[in-house]
Amino acid sequence: MPPAQRVIILPARDHQRTARRALAIALAVLLAACSRGEDAPPAAQKSAPPAIQATIIQVSPQRVPIAIDAVGQVEGSKEVEVRARVPGILLKRLYAEGELVRAGTPLFQIDPAPFQIAKAQAEAQLAQERARNEQARRESARLKQLIDAKAISQREYDDSASALKLSNATLQAAQARVSEAELNLSYTLVTAPVSGVSGRAIRSEGSLVTAGADSLLTTISQVSPIWVRFSISESDLAKLPGGRLARKTAEVALLQPDGVSVAAKGRINFAATQIDPRLGTQQLRAEFANERGLLVPGQFVRVRLIAGTRDNVFLVPQAAVMQNEKGHFVFALDAQNKATIRPVQAGEWVGANWAILAGLKAGDRVVGDNLLKLQPGMPVAPAAAPAAAAK
Image (cartoon, rainbow, N blue to C red):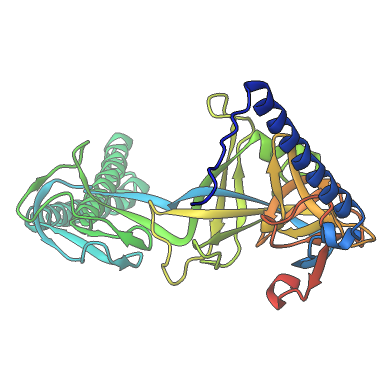
């Protein structure tokens, strides 16, 4: 039989000594590993961060236009109300609503019969007065011979002369009544006073129209040339040279949402002499040629006002300009191609670029993309700039 195994039971103090001895051995092993790590070469401990590929833009001072964008509303250069000048029944509408009409184009026909009768009556009265006038002339000529022969008294001759003058006046009044009747008859055909876009007919055929306050028939808006009303704020005025708008040199363009011009450049034909105290804006109006009729009264358009130029401006892509609580900044490269934060003063947008008024100098290299991965002090590997960005 195998010899009996003996079990040795250690006291509690011996267990504590054993645990301390094991902990000391573990610490010695860890310190040895750390000492071996300190002796390792630096490249093995931590490798340098890789350079970030990014587009680099080398900036140079440029002359850029001072552009102010605003929202404007189109209105006709002439807004004319077409009204009836004589009362009567509206017989017919002679135009198509909403179409372009020329000056003198017939628009409405009012019943001419009463005015034709009035003209005939005036002409009849004129014929009677002409006959009386001829009789008075003959009588005056006959009495003239008799007065020369001393066959009649002076009073009889004076009466005939006065009767002739009275007949002449009555004849003139009859001629004026005929002219008035002809004018009223011509007013029964309502024509367009100006060329423009016709509005809807206010009165329908068969309606009784008057020549008073209720005489409106339609409206006409002259659309060539056409006007655009807009306004600019006091802060925009502060950007202009001298803080004032030079009307003679300012240019105005109308743009579509994609930036394409809608019409030829216009000119400022009105500028308010004071700032609107309620809105803090200056009211302006520009005139544009509109031969093709692309602009319609009441339409809202995007207005770009070119009010001069500014020198020594650096153009940077909009994506390269960032903002924090301290203002705008860009990432620029130093001599070691490392990124540094450069605070800048940003102006307005110029196309796809941002105008930088201060903070950059000629020859500075600005990082154009990959900005989310970039941190100050990180190396940057310049990449070729796209053709569009370089332009």
